[in-house]
Length: 292
Image 1 (cartoon, rainbow, N blue to C red):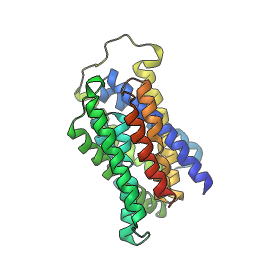
Image 2 (tube, rainbow, N blue to C red):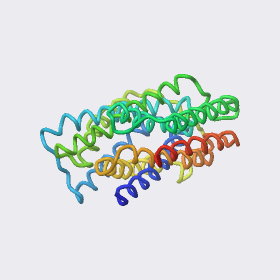
Image 3 (spheres, helix red, strand yellow):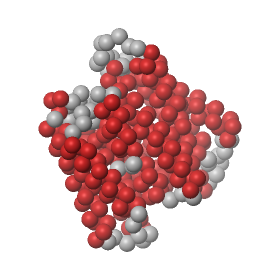
C-alpha cells in the first residue's frame, strides 16, 4: 500500500503546483485559451505515458469511463468558474470537505460507525472554513479577487462532482479499464468543450497588461500546468484504483498548505495569521479523521 500512497503524495504535490500556477495564469491571460492549451498538452502527455504503461479497456467498462469523464469535467468547470470569485486556498480548503462526504457515505454503507470523535473533527473543519472565509472577506479589498457567494456554491459543486469519482474509478477498473483509459475518457469530453469555448471567444479580457517574461508567458504557463495535470491525473487515478478512497482523499487534502503558500507567492492571495490558523485547524481535522 505504501507505493500507492506515495503516488497519492506525488499527485498532491503536482496538483497543488498546477492549481496555483493555473490561478496565476488565468489572472494574466484568457481563461478559455489557457485551459484549452493546457488540456491539449495534458492529453498528449496521457498518450505518451500510455504508450509506455499500456492502455486497457473493455466494452463493459466504457459506460463508467464515460460517466467518470463527464463528472470530472463538470467538477473542473465549477472549479474554473469558482477561481473568478474565490481565493484558491479557500477553494482548496472547502474541497477538503469531500473527505467528510466520503466518510458519511461509508457510514451509510456500513463501513464505518459515526462517533463523537468524527463529529468533533467535522465541527473543527467547518469552523476552520468559516474562519478562513470570514478573514478573506474582511481583507478582500487587499486581495486580487472579490469573494462572492457564487464562488462558494461553485466550489461545493466541484466537491460533489469529485466526491463520486473514486467509486466510479474502482468500478471501471473492476471491468478492465486502467488509469490511462479513465483519464482519456475525461479528455474525450474536455478537449472538444474547451476548444469550443476557446473558439467562441468569451472572456477575452486580459487582466494583467504588463509585459510577460519567459517564466510568466502564456505558452510557458500553459505548458507547465498541462504537464503537471497529466502527471497528477495518472498518479491520482492509479492510487484510487489500488487503495482506499478515504485514505487517498485524506492525503490529497494536505495540498491546501502548498496551494496557499504558492498563491501568496503569486500574489493572488494575501497572508494573514487568521488564515494560517484556519489552515492548521482544517488540516488537523483532516489528519484526525484519517488517523481514526
